[in-house]
Length: 254
Image (cartoon, rainbow, N blue to C red; front, side, top):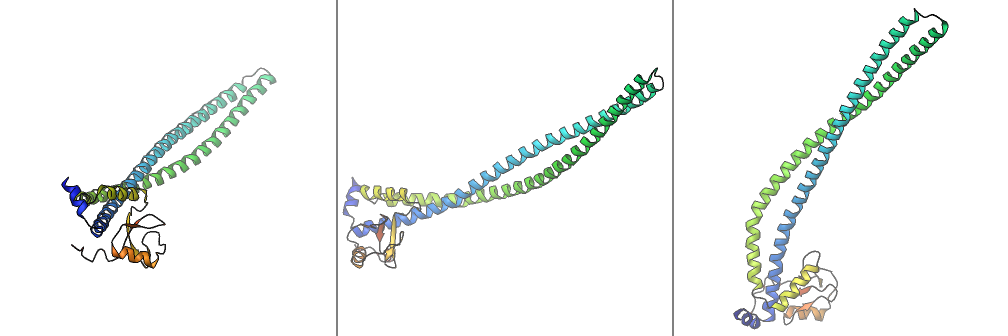
């Protein structure tokens, strides 16, 4: 009840000054949260990128292993084909007729083709392996760079949180104190305007004969009304509460 009586006794000028002070402190809190709010996003982006790089490197490592296995398999096949060629050529010395000789010749020719094909595949696998290893090397370097960036960002975030937490808590207490002096109707309106404003501004000053938010011109008579501080006036274009630019310097009259 005591707060309501106090609110009821406040002049319009005092109410406007309280709203202006509330806006100033709220804006300071917004700036702290914005500064701190960007860093966690940057940290999260870096963590996601690092996870992606680690997955990519892991996948490439598996592909490198598969390529090395394929090269080894082809080398074994070439070796086996060489053994078969020697075997067939030896058998040709003991054939009983031309048909058996021709048959063995075809087997020898086939194994030679297998060797050529195997050597070709080994060259392809080796080239692909070289490319994979190059990608892995660059990815690992990028990974190290991103890990360093992440460590720096985490350190910066920790420092900023440490530096701003006490200041933010102090300002939040100040906001609560100012809010306790403002009548509920005005406070609800203030919070509604702030919530709907992208920049969080519910109270703005008149600057160069225009609204300090939307910059639309304010008629001279309306400016006089604002300067008189006899009633709460809002911008007819953007809905912000308007105060004169001297409200922060001129002491509130008793």
